[in-house]
Length: 208
Image (tube, rainbow, N blue to C red; front, side):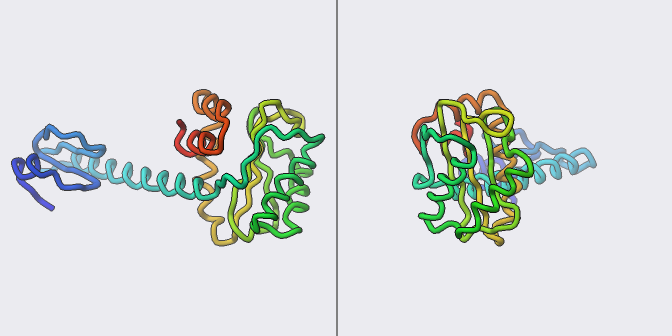
């Protein structure tokens, strides 16, 4: 759409990208000031803004997908067991009871764990299957205040993750969010302080 300065200021229309030849007194996440006659520099700035919009949309989709994997039915606090294998069994039983996986899924997760530890950071382990798909995509979470021995290290949070075949292509961006949260000191601290499911989900998905 094309609008005059007065029309836009009096009634701003919602838009993804605002391109203007006048420095408008409005706040917009993507506002590009250009010359009345577009030059190459202006076009580069517009293209950069469009790329930023697309990246933001990808992040929003990834966050929505990640939030959809979480459920208060699949969230536990301070469960003490003897080994990582027992923790996988425990989380797997919750997922099986919720109708997310079949009986073969957990054995496949344990096989993956024997190949190499899934402790990705000092705080987080993400056990997952090698060959088995979930019947319904999920992330089953255990958050312990006391560290859990996992592989050669210890973690406080275990996220057992399972995906349907159809959801596999959605997960890369969501996993990037998880890793980013646990490799940033501020967001890791927020997650570690969480106590309830809603606090954990907000810290993981939104970083707050």
